[in-house]
Amino acid sequence: MKKQKAVRFSISIPANLRGPLDAMVSARGYANRSQAITDLVRSGLVEHHQQTANQEVAGTITIVYDHDKPLLQATLTDIQHDHHHVILAALHIHLDRHHCMEILALRGRAGLVRKIAEQLVTAKGVKHGKLTITTTGKDLKAG
Ligand code: NI
Image (cartoon, rainbow, N blue to C red; front, side):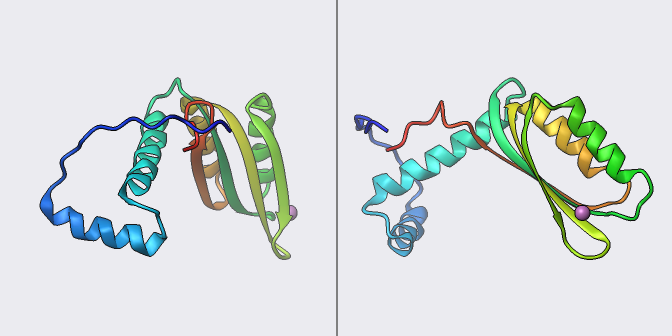
């Protein structure tokens, strides 16, 4: 990716954040404060975009469920077929004799991605579920 031209502007932060910031810069191996703050801004922007239902996002949904629960697998598969245009890939892992884990990769409007995650995670028999939203990368240029 093409390197972006940097812009320079001054910001002020509370004095008591300077020490912890410099400690983080050194602990994470950033070259300087600007690099660390760029990363913080990027992750803040990703989070901000997730709040906008219309924003296109990429994400993964991980669910762990009881494979012996009647009809659960069919319910989960139905939900996925209903949203086949948003679910790009699905990985099914048989964890043990009774438990399955599914990892789905999605790309779509944040509101819809959230809705699909909610439907899957709240299905009766799902023991744990988690949605991770990230950027599609289009709106964030690499440094
Ligand atoms: Ni399985």
